[in-house]
Structure formats: structure tokens, C-alpha cells
Image (cartoon, rainbow, N blue to C red; front, side, top):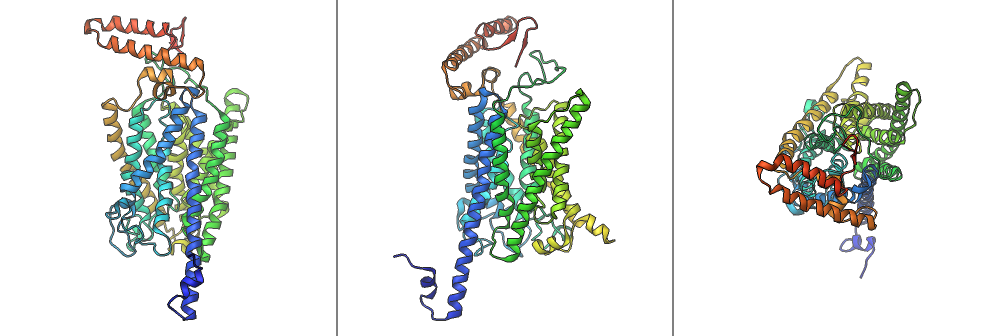
Length: 528
């Protein structure tokens, strides 16, 4: 039989004070639990946003593959974070405890309700909220490896990142026992690093991982080099599947970011916490808006100078908005609205510079995730160290160490917060590089990382999934030709070494005859 909250609290006690306190606690617990569930759902909705951005940015022949990899990020994150990640991130954490490198209890969610935030936050709800964050960190990499990464390698990466690499960073920054945590009793430089929603923890982690993977994996076939390996004078531009999907994905990500930033307040029944969440949604909005405008108009000016005709590029505006959102993530609760506009504005410029540098360095990022998340993850931590408001820092963290510009204006030049955030940047960069570089290097060495050239040319939808994104009879014929080409390749690979040169030329002619490789007959250059 269902009972009311009053009946549960009044059973076994006639003390009115106790009953009132019990009812108050029950209401607060229910509100806080719903708040965190709702915020976690918004964060998880960002998976759909990333999927739409990826699906819109890749070629039509790779849409199904891109969508599946985004789905596998959520799947891998759920299992990896459940088995090991949550324990490494928060296991054994408690206020006032010793500084540790990673958690050591709570594997497979054992004894999950007895953790350092109980009873204010339910343990199962907190796991769900943190899982959504872990999945976000993993899916950042999906776009950087698009159209050329093997399925098995991607699944292994997703499980490793969410099960071990990412949780160590979470523990260091967000656990009260982490050496960078502002809630540690022995705060770094007496301040600790302030990364409220994860500029370094999530966005730098995903961005650096994508950078390393992209460097080892190499660019898509035909992007920067011709079929002979000679650099192209002008990088090839592939036709994207749908700009509409990219726009939809951008709006979904922006929408999800409200849960991302305000949800990190964890509970809202305290006046200070509700104010924190309210301030976060305002700074989030302003950061995104200013980032979109700065990237859009900076690109307009640049193209006008280069070609004489300015271009209002929607891609620049969308990625600029995402860059502004990343830039505000670390300091969404400790910087003023006007500072959020500055953070987002610079974030949009950072994205534009980073995107152009990737092209100059011949690094192929299909969705520009590296400049959006890595470059602006760094900037987001720096802007906190410069512009964190003393009143807000004291309200949220109880720390007297604010942004360096505020301290400098008061004549003290207190740079402890800035220094702590710079240490976080170095730590995240070093940890991810030292762990993920060997992992991707070994995968590549074993031949498990990059897709077969034939599979890449025909498209991963046909190669791995048996059909294109738009199923029709022509795709069926394309798949049949691909199977014939694969069979031919296996036969040729068994040829003697004395026939290697002749086999290469014969294979090229046979592939052309199958119409698998679109070739300009005059220049003999693969148009891909």
C-alpha cells in the first residue's frame, strides 16, 4: 500500500520537529534527485547532437558508420564506466581524506550509495549523471576519426577512455581527494584548479585524444595527397552529407549544454546552489552567442581579404557557437555575464585559427572537433584564472583566490588560481598523451586502426554494414563490385614477390574496370 511522505515520517515518532525535518529532507531529496536526472538526460541528449553533426559532416557513403560509432560511444561508456570508470573516479572519496591518484573502491557500483555526497545526492543518480559526462568525452573523438577508422579499434578506444583514462582525470580534479581539486584539504597552491563543468576534464581529454589519433591515423584518402603520395597544392574538399543535420546537431548540443553546466551544481534546494545553476545558464547562453558571431564575422573578413568576396559561412557560425560553449564550461558559475561574452568571443577566434592550422599541418579532422574542444578547453581554463569573480569564487568554492585580473586591480597580483589551472592543463595533456599515444601506435602497428584502402574508397557503409546510407539498387551493385574487388585483392596478395610490380599495375587497372575508383583518365588522379 502506497503511503504519503507525512505518513512515512510520522511512523514511530510523535515529535513534531522530527516530522517536519523528515518531510523537509524528503522533499529536498526528491527535488535534487529529479534535478540531477533531468540534467543528466540533457547531457545524454548531446550524444544525439554529436551524432547529427558527424552524420552531416561526412560523405553520404559513410553516414551509417558515423552514426553507429556515436552509438557505440554511449554503449562503451555505459559498460566501461560501470565496471571500472566510476570506481577509479570516485571510489573511496571523502572530504578531509588523503590525496590519492585514483579511486580504489566501488567497482561494478558496489556500495554505490555510501559515497561522499550522500545523503544530499543519491548514489545511483550521481553515477548516471557522471556516465553522461564520460560518454560526452568519448564521443568528441568520433568526428576526428570519421571515414577511415576500423570498428574494432573504435570500440576498444571507447572502453579504454571511459574505463580508465578519463576517470583518472575526473578523480584528480573533481574528487575531494584529487591533487587538483578545490575541495581538497591540501589545495594546490592554496586554491586548487576550478573546472566547474569540465573544460579540461572532458573537452581537453577528448580533444587531445582526437589530436593524437588523427596524427597517427593520417588524413582521408585524397584529402591532402594524391594517389602517388604527393601533396596537393589545394586540399580537397569533400561533399558533406547534410548541412541541415549539422545545424540540428548544433542546436541539440547547445540545448544539452544547459544541463551540462547548470547540472554540475548537483542540487538546487540550497539558495546558493540554485543561484549557481541560474548563473550558469546565463553565461552559457552568452558564451555561445558571442562565439558564433566572432567566428562568423572573422571568417567573413578573412575571405573578403583573400578573394575579394566575403562569405557568411554557416559552418563557422555553428562551430563558433560550440567553441563559445566550451570556453565557458570551466567558469560558467564563477565569471560574470560580461566576461562570458569575452570568453566566447575569443573562443570563436581560437576555433578559426586552430582550424586553419590543422589544414596547414595536413591533419584531417572531418568535424573540426580538435580546435573546438582542445583549443578552447585550454582557453576556458585560462579565462577562469584571469576573470573569475571574487564574490562568485567565495560563494561556490569558499576560496579567497580569484581571477588574476581582479587581484591585479586590487594591487595583490594573486595568481594562484591561474597557476593551478595551468597545472591542470599540463596534467591533462601529459596524462592523455602518455597513455593514448602508445595505445593508438600499437593499434596502428598491428594494422587494427585504419580501414583498408578499398573499404575507404567504396565507403564504410558498404564495407562494414552492407549498404549505403540511402539504400537503393545502385548501392547493391556497388556492394557487389566491392566484394569482387576484395576477392581480387586477396588473389593478388598471394602472388609471388617477383610479380609485385606487375601485380600493382594490374590491380589498379582491375579496380578501375570495376568502377570502384573514380579516376580522371587524363590525369590518372583519384578524385577522392
